[in-house]
Image 1 (cartoon, helix red, strand yellow):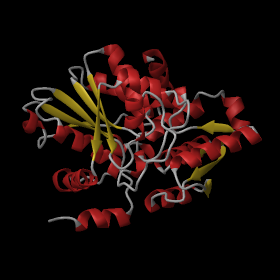
Image 2 (cartoon, helix red, strand yellow):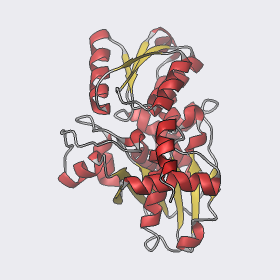
Image 3 (tube, one colour):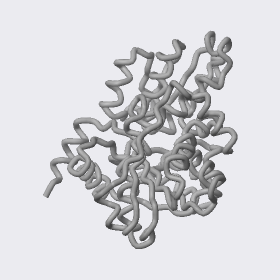
Length: 320
């Protein structure tokens, strides 16, 4: 997997940013170690998703992609990255979004001028619809996680981490469909198998965790509304990310809504930085594991920044 990720890193040069790795003076003393924040909220299109979307499109020969039509499905961040890549590369496509897409993400997509359509109550319904449309019309599907090139693109974060932080002991990662954590784990575990990879999901949408616990991908809809809308929704049957997560992730945590909300406020108060709910998962996960991570060098993935004003108002109204 490391070779594929190294190829992706070379392919992405000039299209995505090497994001900062910032030492955290507030959390580091809590573990008597070093906590660093990998600031993917500063990535093009506002989240780590730009890595996978660009890598998928750029992996297709230039002549073929020029004449192709691409489709994608997403709760928002992958859609934003897909639209950003289409505009930059001057390609044609359409994005499908669930009906409950966050307003901030929908506004960005509208502004990009790419065709879009709302379909489905959940992200999984939207993903399956996009796959059907692609198969019926011969379009190229740019899946949010169930694709080797997408996983390799997200894995370039792992490559950057090991270069920026060669003494890394643990990395805490938000998880939805598993593309981000599968890519990061695939790289760092090959470089150093002793690095702990810790996945965090919202308690309100624990599909990957429950699938890991049951030994197979669960198909029933168990999602409830969550601030972490970027990780919400079920897994596509047969997703390549599931066995990767089974084999490469060391530990799983389920994070409550109050914990997510607290970390959004914490980033604003301590770092003067706006993050989305899914980025709060890794920060909350760190708080859960202060004893376990004592004396370690830890990276928390700050995966994105897009949060609607409505959700932000709710979060800020909860200040006691």
